[in-house]
Length: 267
Image 1: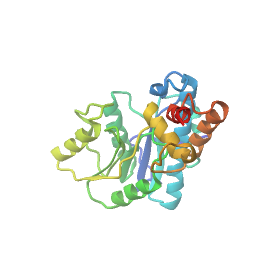
Image 2: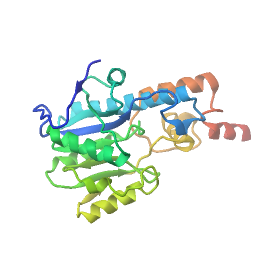
Image 3: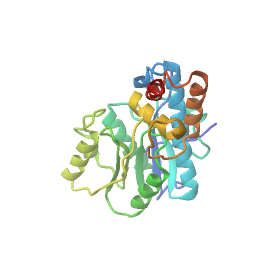
């Protein structure tokens, strides 16, 4: 599918005054995607579930954009040359813009700056590791950013990061002196906001799926009838659910969901 590719600093009247809900994307491929999920997943399975995460996240954003015309879905992608592959994973109506090549913080700020330069009045950065992020979180995010007030809206992750960051203006300081990929990311980002007197609004916490523990949490959410305990449920994530359902149907729970297997042995 050929999707529109946006170019930084090229004003687009179609998106002017709207909110970019941008998904940070590294095009999935075996051996390079979701490596912290290996094991229990193989490298090819990790790439496959990464594709499912992206399809579910982008589909949720696209569905929300039909409800709320303020929102436009954008894939902020790398590497250059993977456009055709991503076009098969993203829903119709989604747009794309390439990431700047640099360290992670600079990539994030670059994405924010580039999207504002096109004409968006608000920009959100959303991770691609949260396939079940609740629809209500997107609604709250959009509602806060419709108000023309300089502020930061941030959704903390249970592991200390954040799953979404929404802004009305580009603030470089929010992405400086942050120890990325640690449990300090959320706290340090809030600290940076305080340094520049930027009001911060926190959304309900959610979780990334990037290790065995969070994969088990995802399985409990998507397959509550087989879970040891009830957990809060978010968006349905149908692509991810079908991928995991097939593994469970073929092999049972022993490899990818060992907690349930251990409980079964002890009963």
